[in-house]
Length: 413
Ligand code: SF4
Ligand code: SF4
Image 1: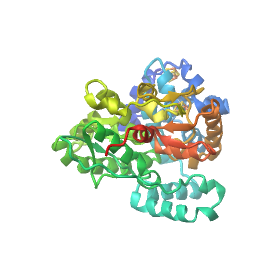
Image 2 (image 1 turned 45 degrees about the horizontal axis):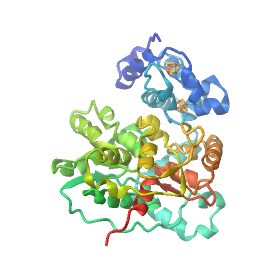
Image 3 (image 1 turned 30 degrees about the horizontal axis):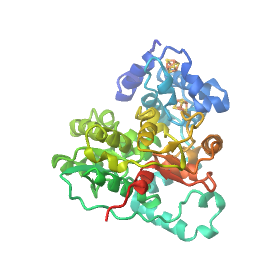
């Protein structure tokens, strides 16, 4: 589409980026069919095409209002529309830019500012969120049901294998996952250990930056990214082959470090390297299938049925459509069909907190699809989706799939 951006935006990094993306959109509307918020609300303003148009208007001089901000806030950033778009519109980058520009001129209410500040103050720091989670686990008996359902019981991580192999990979511990589900990364370490790969942590690495960035504290998000690069660099210099992600929400953001820091003279080259090295755990194992003689140790025959929920950050963000499902089948898991697997579960980072009603509607729909064929377990690939699904899955356990691979491996003596 043709654009005529205000000079003040044309001259900025964000404006230039948005203009490039806007020009690719031909307004065909194919993306509407797969947008969860359009599906729920039926309004063009809550569709990808409608949001693209609103961002274009703002960049061309129309004053944004609280309504504009609301329609952008309601977007899950699931990027389902990117998967559907025949013109390659990078909607995710566009909505990030649009939100940042709207945020500058539309003030938020005190309640919204406080909630956003609280999320930015606690969620990205494992040493702050960790004690709160422990407190919640200790007093779960007296917590209201809605809060209790989001706090998983205490979990034993099990042993982390010693780093004895020549081949090493880094893993991101992240912010929320170590306290909510410490067994996920320990399982990944045991699985890779069977493939003669040592999984190591960089103690100073922390939140990937996505929480701050998607709450429109974009510089804060970039600072998290730079801190991680500094923390990882000594291991990369020492030959770490990959940076493994077990949370696809973090993975999609770390894979974007190259774009995020491309104009930073100090970090641009390093960020590019990080993007090249960043891999979801499913990609790492699928790659090892090609020539690692130990791969057979991960295979088993599973009678139990499994419903897999592919996070949007994996299938639409990282463009890993079907990678994990195919891998699990090759490893011997018995996957049941799940209707509308391309649709978001409503977790979407902090969306389940900021847009509760829409989030719960999507959750109800997703749980019904996942449980339809009565699976013994539900598996996913992102801590946010896992906790969100767990809050509504009743007696059906929800786990990260790598935990199932870990559990199914014959134990070594
Ligand atoms: S984003 Fe893509 S699918 Fe949607 S209207 Fe634009 S060109 Fe069409
Ligand atoms: S990112 Fe998801 S919610 Fe947002 S416009 Fe695209 S499909 Fe709709």
